[in-house]
Length: 382
Image (cartoon, rainbow, N blue to C red):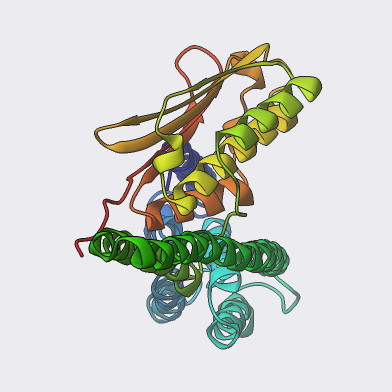
């Protein structure tokens, strides 16, 4: 989880906690005015316990839901035994906590346990109404409120479940499409190395007729090329086996320059800085560099309309190949929750599978930066 996501989750939990505290306080005041001092304590304690469990519903939805429903059922039973004249319906604050537990269960759990939690929640809401209670026999207002909260929780939970399923389906569709492109890259990687081996073998045949003593040098080069081909093929096939997002096969620096030129015609000015040694990198590294740059520039076009310039720096250092794409969009235009998508998510998985790292986030002051570091594997010993 990224830092912005942690802040968003922490803020949502804090906001929900404030809502729970406000509901418990309002409930305590209403009970005190209706029944007198001291009567608010049992309901507030049980409601507070359920609300605390609801705050942890996203981490452990099943355990929190079971515990919360158990606390609510126990509270109803104790009230009926100890204070038969006191209303036994789940209080509004408790019903709110139960609604959060039911909604989280419907969103995150499998269908059977999710349905069981939803059914148990409805049973708890109805239990207070079915139990003997003071007053008339009509539907209690608190029970009606609990039922409405339960319906809202079911609707919200199912809606979020559907949205999550659609997001997973979209991510899987992107993953399948890019795995097909990775298969084409595997063909290019193998063809590149085998072509060199064939040329070296043909040269060895010519040298063998003229100077047989020099054939050993050609055979060593063929062996080295074969070793490099096997290593490259293992890395690319490893991506396919891991199910990570793929990247299309991309040629060397000339195509990267062409990509930047195309971007200049559609967006802000781009400065490309690229060090020597590009041609010595394995094909899977060059293709990943190309794809990271393309994805980052595409995000600038989509989400940073205020950017005036973009810098693209590709260099090789002690840690490997580093590529960084940074724009100068105003801070108001840099929207962290919109700047990442399936493309950068796939690139992060791919970069990490190759042994590297990728960071995407706002720059100090203004703008956005995408920085990836890829190790360049050394030739395996013969």
